[in-house]
Image (cartoon, rainbow, N blue to C red; front, side, top):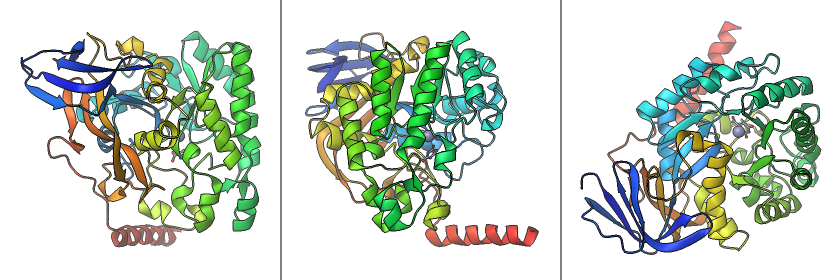
Length: 464
Ligand code: DOR
Ligand code: ZN
């Protein structure tokens, strides 16, 4: 059988919520058999004993920076990072330059994924033209184009004007689109650098109060109730936000939400060294907020785990805290953090954690419309991750396939390591390494980067 792969002896997620000892046979991009004792003359056998075999992970929220900021990341490098982290589908945010606010940019990003990506890259579209918060973007056109945009967000910045959010939701409802809210009340968060409280006072940094997020979460939940639009809340970080979602669900609302690994694994006290790799928006919150996020994950209030992979170049991070960019990379550490911080301590079962990384985000994004359900069943596309749940490894940003290395986890010991990733039946990661001599990330050395940024700054001065 040509191009066939037999994944043998693993513990496989053959149906949501249940791991069973099973073999998975893949051929021509599709799962051919999944069950006990599959016999085959497969061209290749992957020994998955001791490993978990699951649908490839689905990231509902990443920043791949193309077009316009390819020095941080592009679709190709982002997809390399993704498959190394076990992902086979990545939805990327439209805060690019130009923004993904029309069909031609959406198709450009989608086509880059098809041509250069190692996995499925699907763009979200902007809600407003240029993400400027003023004029609605042509969502219908983006929805109908080749990229089939389903999710719309001005993520990176909030949609300040509630009336425009209302109109966007009315529009989204008519086309069955999903509004993804970056929930932030700017009048409260402006110039903020970290969570507001003891630590921001101690460090002398301007705070971002939890209410900045919660007021916006409340606003968007109320508007979604009014308009009947489908709403997804991005990167929830506070106890109050989790409570608002829980309440909305009790009223029967279909709102969904996500949390990132950094918000459940790190709190504001980590900022004591002014490490800009801990600067992100929303900011790291308090211990009590983390407890609430963990409770929200375990009681099902929080549907999905997303990376908010936000690559930045050294010159944008190795600078004063106030001027450093917000964001951290996450595609290559997410699974390890989920295993070490959620599964190992018993916050989530392995099965539930996998659901929040695969079938649930796939369903939120209605990937069924592409014939994809993130299930290991016969006839389904063969997007598969194999990982060793007990393998321990140390995060070394120098090995990242992302073009950027802005991670707060350097030197952390994590449990749970990807061994193989298959995308449409092709092995793209084998024994933890990218297959086929991949182009490695081209990062300037620290000296070159600072020379480049000094030159740029001087250029600007000269012009001024
Ligand atoms: O930390 C963040 N980084 N939060 C955002 O909302 C945007 C993102 C980025 O694009 O860098
Ligand atoms: Zn984001």
